[in-house]
Length: 172
Image 1 (cartoon, rainbow, N blue to C red):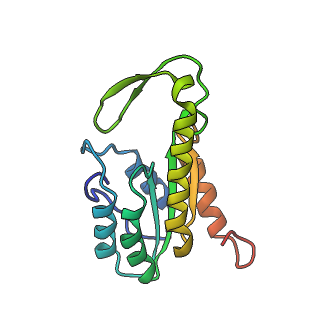
Image 2 (cartoon, helix red, strand yellow):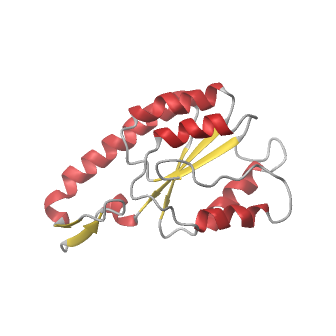
């Protein structure tokens, strides 16, 4: 998705389904910006049966905007899981040299001296993460962090295999 859901795949338990999922995820979206709220509302209208909904994003939006559409999905008994994808530098911001940071949606670029902004960045990043958890926790929605260096196919495979374990043996 970008401003709307461009591809989606109906749940099926058959050979090749995982490859179909990876194929859709490998496509790049044509939009230049992302709107999480409209696609979540679109998903609620598309998915009529109780489903597992996995949303993969950096979730760098105002967390309060997610409350209503995620609440609606949970009220319809969907299981929702958020996979937050972050660049490793977003997590530790440990570079000691100025770096060029590019906004992948607007393509705007800015040189940043990590030493000068590290504490402020970390404080704001942690505040955003806490605000996101404050929205998700009461809804029972897990947030799984992964980095751009984690192979998505392994993360998804591991996640889905724990869900297919016999009752009492898998992750809840």
